[in-house]
Length: 68
Image 1 (cartoon, rainbow, N blue to C red):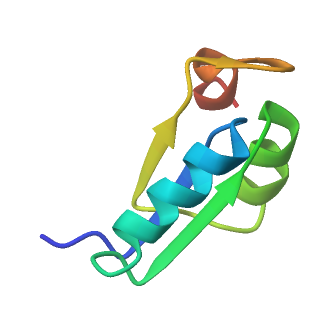
Image 2 (image 1 turned 90 degrees about the vertical axis):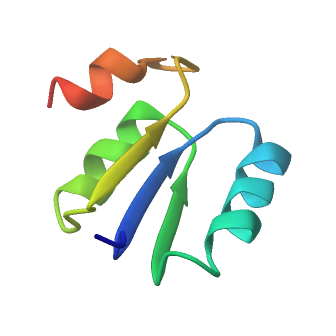
């Protein structure tokens, strides 16, 4: 099964853009956010097939995103 949507949560902007560039040819809808707060906001209106999470974010960590 091919992923249709992906939310990347990464606070390093350069690395996040690199991930998007590498994955957007394989996944039709790739979105990038940089914090737990942004992830929560995105997830309120977007249901991705998968999440790619940075473990340590400026306002929390990966566990804070998946505990929504």
